[in-house]
Amino acid sequence: TYSTELNWDWRLLAALIYQESKFNPESKSHRGAIGLMQLMPTTALLFGADSVSIYKPATNIEVGVKYLKWLEKKFMPIVPNKEERIKFVLAAYNIGLGHVIDAQLLANKYGKDMTKWDDVKHFLLNKSLPEFYKDSVVQFGYCEGVETNNYVSGVIDLYMHYKNVTSKFW
Image (tube, rainbow, N blue to C red; front, side, top):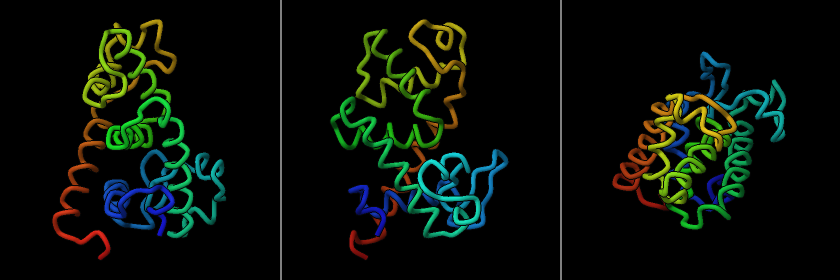
């Protein structure tokens, strides 16, 4: 139901949810992210859930999808190709929009294609090095991009697996 609001294959949204919480609606991370979609309470508040309703699976997914739609709109004018844009959305969902935009700006500065995930992920992976996180185009500073790179790959790989073992319409 919620995947249609994103214009995503339901198996992609399911892969994200599995990657986030292993389908455990009571999941809570050491950083405080909650529920199936591992939403931070402040993000949930911004997109319409309070500290009680965020624990309800339907609300958690609804709010997570609103956040994904918001990220998708941010990347739409920058990354026109939908398949590429999904990777950027997944990365931003994991590490934050600012760090992904920083990596895009670095890619552009160094002559790489800021609309191609394979070009941009190199700079996200290197935002833990002073020569990159202290660069004048970077606004959000240091980050560890390894987890995010693995996250994007993990969601996409799981999505491909789900496509192989289920029908689109189940």
